[in-house]
Image (cartoon, rainbow, N blue to C red):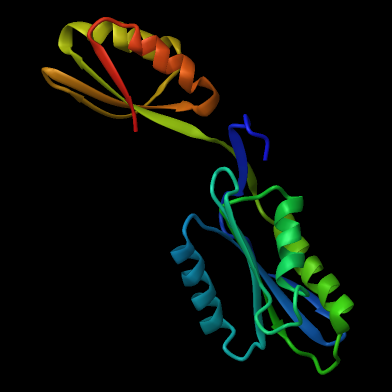
Length: 203
């Protein structure tokens, strides 16, 4: 991923079930919007209840705004014949915070490693083609601390810079939690750092 990039792609919601058939075998595809490894475990557990007679639950996931973590799992299929083809589609669609699972029911005919690679790739591709994909910004949060007399200058800068306020406590000692795009973060930090009697801290 490009070092200075401050956006990423993910799926907006879980996808509809898809079905790919190959020589009797059925591959049910699912895409899930996830942000933690616990989310992933929960999704797979849910599918295992739903498809309790299926032979394989092969999957791949990618997590993190900067695409930091990923994993591919063949779940008993030959090495790299299932998880990696699914992961390849996550890469092709440039997605993170996404889990794709392909649930296989064996149809009686062995597909061979090449056939499996193609089948799992197709299952994942069909699934992601049904997804609503959205681009999100990588944001940085700051805490602003100031007293009431500085309120007007702080709020004017927030309005001028179109800064998002996440939280505010405007008593005698005012606290504002703000969120800005990563590429704007240094500029915004310097802006508030230079305002008299305003403290800014990165969260």
